[in-house]
Length: 284
Image 1 (cartoon, rainbow, N blue to C red):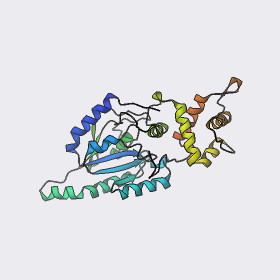
Image 2: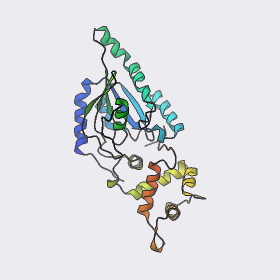
Image 3: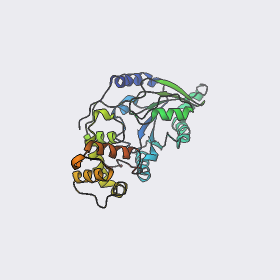
Image 4: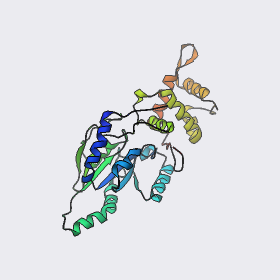
């Protein structure tokens, strides 16, 4: 699956972020806890340069908690500050400010020594589309400041948002890289909804999802779709799920499009429980 998607507003966002960096104290990089590496934009390292950074593992409630702990250890070993959170419920948000103060203590101590009056932390929030930036901003600001939606690309302009008296947050449109060198990255992003469904072949995504579940969460796959055994081949597996869910047309013909939509919808709506689509040490 070759996905190429780099709308003009994303290229513009990259330029805007680069221009604003001189105003920024710290970068909050928001990623999907279910796929922390695949949902990181390779350009972000280049864009934010040497600015202090905290990786926020959003949607942690939708990820396998055991695997999320492995990711926190992974980032810690690399000297990267990371926090798990759920922007939808607000869980974990209270930890952002204290960690930001720790990360920026030396800088603000230097400013204070120069006689600079204490001021709010200026933070940039950045990440790929549909990772939950607007929801996080609204939770932090305790207002409906940013547009939210379950579609990628909802935020299309920058805005400063006050978070109490101690943080000023700069939101930006989601930035996604122009193409996916590794097709597996595209599949992971697609199954979690980070890519618009209109540009995808849903059957390909469903095939990836079923193979992933077979290998990593076979018991959940069987329980959710009422399977006694999981067929080795993908077509019989599709057929059995279709029959059990009534996705069969007249003449006994399996409706693969409908079955694919059903599989993807059930994963995204957590009907198979919390899932993590990659682990530390795996190639992506």
